[in-house]
Amino acid sequence: MDYGKFKYQQSKKLQEARKKQVQVQVKEIKLRPKTDEHDLDFKIKHARRFIEEGNKAKITVVFRGREITHMSLGQVALDKFVEALKDIAIIEVKPKMEGRSMFIIVAPKK
Image (cartoon, rainbow, N blue to C red):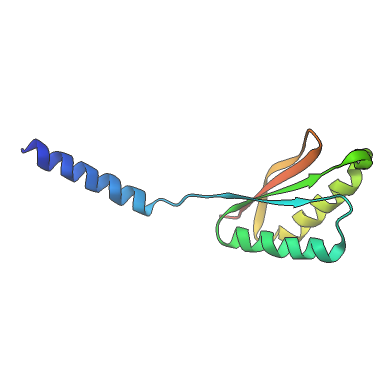
């Protein structure tokens, strides 16, 4: 067999494999603990759109200044997100604190 022909066929196989693979992106949505109801609903719509496209969504609640003492407000916002998205998404990472932010990652249901 010709080595040049072999290398050409290998590169074509790799090219086809790359064409068929799907890359999942993680889209981030940032909130604050005092984010209003209407704004939360708007951000939930964005998260729903991201998940329906097949991407994951990382919902982050950022605490600034003395807001860190009221972590329960951030937890309530994350719970509202989870409740609104539970029909199309599953929680991949439970609520976790990282510095001054609390986040969850939701992924589309299979």
